[in-house]
Length: 185
Image (tube, rainbow, N blue to C red; front, side, top):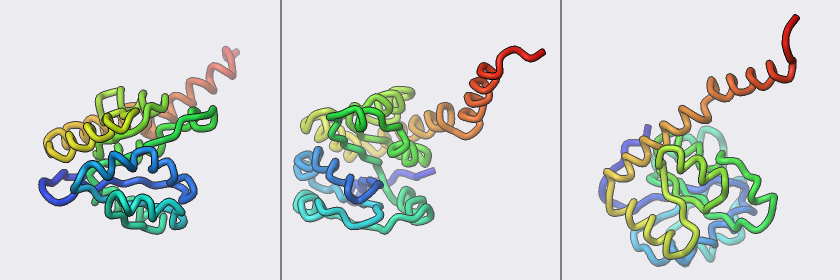
């Protein structure tokens, strides 16, 4: 579980396929408007949008591996996932991108994609931001209030444990398979 700290820059983390990092440009104006942020990108390859992101805030790129990402999450303060939600493919994504950070106690700031609304809304484990001004307000709140980060992080972790943990998902699959099998003789 991430122990939230005071002082220093607010460390944002995003992970994904480098080509999809362009979604971060949806929040680049907010990143530029809030001094004291830094962004860690955990990716398969350096994203082409990196120069534009670096004009807004200091960025660090880390080559993805499960182990590297797990360590990186423990050094972050907030998991972010701005998204350009323009088609069914983007609307259909799961909460996975934010849930990994939430599992270690990071509050999420994310676009209003349905799965993000459900994950963040379950217990208040983050902030949904649709506009640049909402992103700015969310980042400033979390930057200025370490207790809020810790509370939201705890609620984020609770959400993952109650909704997305292996025993919970396994039980859901078992119920589904029992329903599909029908009554036993």
